[in-house]
Length: 346
Image 1 (cartoon, helix red, strand yellow):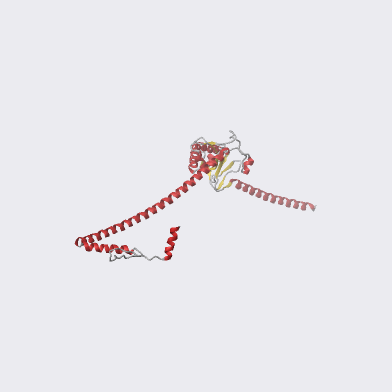
Image 2 (cartoon, helix red, strand yellow; image 1 turned 90 degrees about the horizontal axis):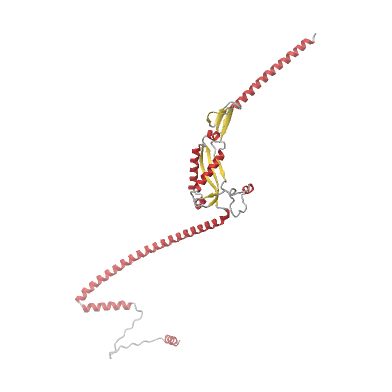
């Protein structure tokens, strides 16, 4: 009789403990459910991404930009993230010669055959009917996330095909020399053609640039192209040297011309001054000559003799003898006389 109250107390304590445990478990489950709902409905869109929300496969609203956003839990809503802010690229090796996976990995190719193999080796035909190989790459950004995600089943392959198309159209307008240089005009033309095509198709992208990774003539004739390039380089170097030499010669000729012109002008001025002075002197002497011819003649003769004798080292005055004869007696050095005799004998 005394154990029944004790059993009832134990039963009540156990029931109370179970009730408390169930209450705690209920709160925990509710909390977990809330955490799950919050975690599955609120999501973050990273910078450079655009999100599209589909509810039972149908697009809800417009594309959502970076930041916090929400949606109903999956499978009611599905979130598709589009990398619209980052630059993407597509590389085309359609027009490159055949390489195995190992050759592409090592960056080396085997010896080519005598000819290209159609259907295996890719190539381009230029406007002057020459063949070359090329690797191209395009860079683009996604502008319209809806078109990018839903309008086309394989947009990357479509862009690859459109890049090949633009390259073929461009190469048909360029000769091989211009194509091998891969100048900006060629790249701009390909980008313009590709952009126009993407706008017509409504691909929802912006083409940011097109570059040639490598353009090369066929390996079978690459040596001939390299020889032509070397000849062009040598020709350009010689033309440059010739132009430099021409400029040097012209510069020297202009300097010599200026010097001769200045010298001739100075000589002309000196000659004019001399002639003018001589003419003035002659007029003065002539006036004196008309007045006193004999005296003037004697004075002029003396002046002439004076100037003439000033230029002579040794002077001999010969006097007339009483008989009227002119005699010249010279004393010669004996040693000098012997040297003259030896010279005459030789």
